[in-house]
Length: 212
Ligand code: HEM
Image (cartoon, rainbow, N blue to C red; front, side):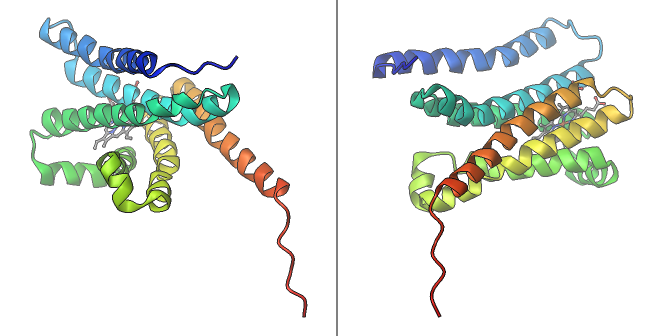
């Protein structure tokens, strides 16, 4: 079913998406302010980590959904979803830096190096930074479309790193249900891209080999 919102409708859709994506943050802020958390540090770290992963998955889902539904306007929500992934990752990282290490960056880096699951999460976060920094229209123009697109393919590395980080963390508890579920979601979202790329390559006419 083709649906193309008018510019006004698109603004409404974007505003609703913006507010909805902020709800987990406000819910968390409320729980903290009302002193409703038994183990605040653990809860905040896990909650913000989970939302980072959800928004990474939502961002990766935009292109497949657009292609399947032909709702091209969905692309207009992708940047916002990606920035929300970064926003929750920043909260997740800040919680760790603040409550676990009281902003002692050296101590934090030692911990990052010592615990492999944190090394992986930290790598994913560091890779997210250039994507967030280059998300503006001005940066797209500055880098040029091709280079910008190549850089933003980093998300195909970041999402699996996020899964590995989650998996490793839960491995200590022998609790793999959620990491398996999200691992399969990310696999499907990346797998469909590989499948499309292969179908496209197979459909395009082969370049004739030069005659000797
Ligand atoms: C893209 C980046 C990242 C993603 C997607 C991510 C995701 C997650 C997820 C899903 C969890 C578990 C939530 C749960 O149990 O329900 C988690 C936990 C955690 N992450 Fe991350 N994370 C990322 C980056 C980082 C970074 C940069 C650090 C610190 C340097 C970090 C440190 C932790 C810690 C300490 C825990 C909780 C461990 C515990 O409660 O036992 N993560 N993360």
